[in-house]
View 1 (cartoon, helix red, strand yellow):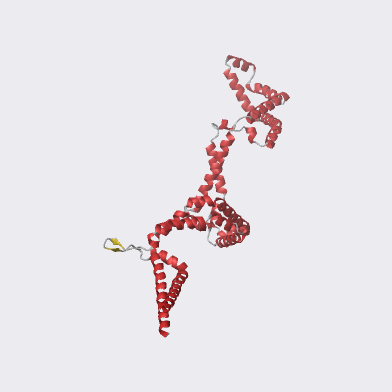
View 2: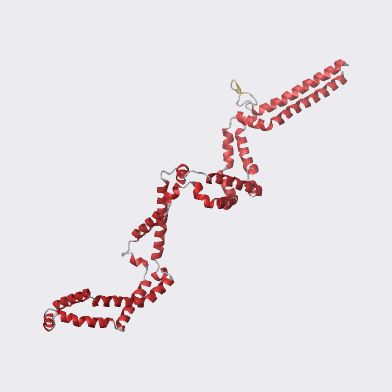
Length: 380
């Protein structure tokens, strides 16, 4: 009886060992050997192992699995719209931005480090000058096609219309005052003298009857009396109104030959850039520059940016992922892995399961050995 038990136990042990070793060997043969083995010119069967032999196919399948089942646009979009995830991203962004805004370094140094600028102040002035100049030139080109009346504000045009008559009065007053002055009288005397000199004999005959002084004394009062006439005022008003009305329907491009637009733009640009406190701003620390706006940046601006960035990525995720060619990236990465690394990765995930397969093989082998031992005992 004891010999029968020993025989059965022996067969159970043999079956368990064979089953366990067989499964362990099968698992090893998934990876080993890494390369084909040869006896002479003949390749040894089952070499290399299954995974090394079909690594290229494995890389393709892994890439496809990642894109079609793991890293999908729908899954990422769902995650990005998750309120908890959005709140986490906003809090992370706020923390990082707050850390940046509390920097004591000057804006100039930060720009030198972050943007690799040699002279940030000069660069900013150049960019500001270029921006302002472009805007002014564009605006000037646009205005050139318009009439003066379409450019000047209506209120200003009304003021000019109302100012024509007072301006005409002012002109007459100034002219009268000048003619009534000693300087004006001398100038008038000179003009009369030159006029008579240009008339030759006629001028000489007039000079025979009048001395120069007496002629000026005659002309000056008459001229002053003429300037006080209402008709003269109406003539000047009419002239001014005519010129003003013609000016209003004139396009600015008609002044190109009289005004150097480029020089005006450059001068205005230079004045504006010189007034900008760029040098002062560059010497401020970042925390000093943003202190008045820090709370608004953290509580309002950052969440808006994170939300806008999330919505943009969500709406454009599918084409972005297609442009990234994730399947090819995964395939390329797997192809660069050594077989040893692939084995290590698989075992790190499934080592426990592989052990259980080995143990299962041993259990099944042991059961088969038990059955065989019972059959042999019964037959014997």
